Picture 1 (cartoon, rainbow, N blue to C red):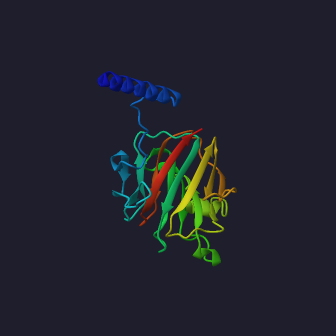
Picture 2: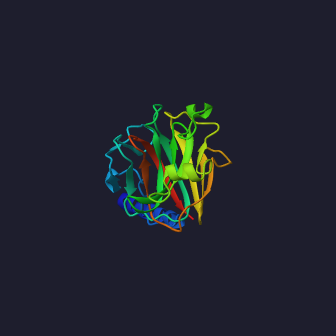
Picture 3: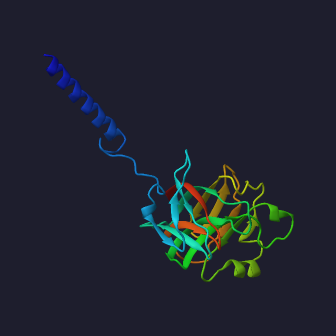
Length: 224
């Protein structure tokens, strides 16, 4: 008698779990996908090494500091339009703190990138103690070319600037040929640009500049 009641209880629980799962649009055994940066084996590395981030509340990675630019491409990614959110942490020491997101990538030399630096490279004024946001699209539109041909358009100071060696949250919104970057919960973008190519999609990855490393955590990708 007790065994029958026990079996009935198990059956009822299973039915309830199945129904709840159907209401959520998934099977009872389905589990949520791991965060994109939870598994370093998913990253295709270009001129960098990677290590899991040691942080009690964040899931992410640390990229090494070596000469030249570097990438950690998210294997199998194909990002077109949507929103990219990530927490970043660089270094106070300049000029070794250039880090951000590469997107619409074709190969390790051809991609768009929005990134953040410890200082305004073109400044030399009072803003040099803060941070800047940059866009470039190599190999055609390098930082040097954009700084020379379109000053103040694709490289801007961030006001107010986050502390460069603390975590700061970044939200990048890509729609058609436009992109915006936001810091924290800011309502206004710190960068609002037209992309300098006609690519509609491509790989997504972590980007670091010459002699730069950095910490990347809690990457979230939402397609439009």
